[in-house]
Each structure stands twice: as C-alpha cells, then as structure tokens.
Image 1 (spheres, rainbow, N blue to C red):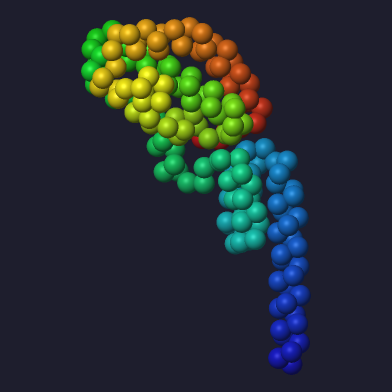
Image 2: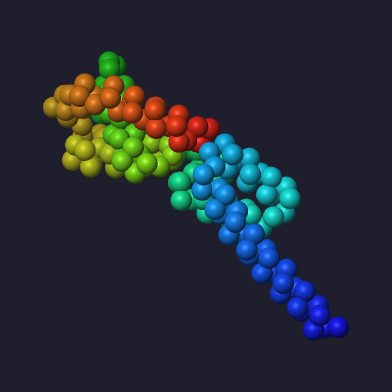
Length: 170
C-alpha cells in the first residue's frame, strides 16, 4: 500500500512538472496584461508550478512582480546646484535623463520603466562626468543639445515599443 502511494505521488509530480513546462511555453507569447492576470489567477488557485513559470517569463521580460518596485519609476533629478535655480534647467535635465533611459530600454527591448535603469546621479556621472550639484552651464548646453537631437525620435520609438510589447506594465 505504501508503495502504491509513493508511485501515485511520483506520477503526480511528473505530471505537474510536465504541466509547468507547458505553462512556460504558453506564456512566452502572452502579452503583459495576460501575464499579470495569469499570475493573479495562479496565486488564487494556489498553482505554484504555474506561478513559477509565469514569474520566470515576467523576469525574462524585466517586468516587476511587486508594487514597491514602481518607486524606481518615479525618480527625478535632485533640485541642487543649477537644477534648483528658477528657469528651465530642471526640466531640461529631467528630459535628457528620461530620453537617455528610454533609449537604453529600446536597445535592451525590456519593459521595465526607464528610470529604473539608473538614478539621476548615475546618469549625470555617466553622461556628463559630474555629480548633479556640479552641473555647469556648459553641461546644461550639452543636455539641451542632446534633447534637441534625440527627444522626439526616441519618444516616438519608445511609445511604439511600449504599446506593442509592454502595455500595462509599470
């Protein structure tokens, strides 16, 4: 009797594992909203194998699992140095930061929000070679020039990519 129980459990595990592989194949073609809905359904159904397959697919697309991750999407430049003075410097810096990060997301083909790529401080050091509080008028001119050259084309390309591949993903 004990041997029959072990055989039955083993058969169940094999079938569940095979079902998990099928789930992974099914979700590779799913849209972002379908993945989110499937994850919720798998949690409600207590389907651990299905949820694992869904989360692996979400991870491969750099989709967020938890609400707290969205805080990264709201990052902005700090209001220090020239960025704190009245005028358009803050908006210019923010636009360049967002455009630079959107371009990276396009290159990576990932749905993660652009600002999660890096903090403004990291952007400032990488792009300008200075910390935000040390940004000069020359650096602001560089940011303005970058925006003029890239903002419209990158925004249009990113919007098209996001609408096609990432709708409803944070």
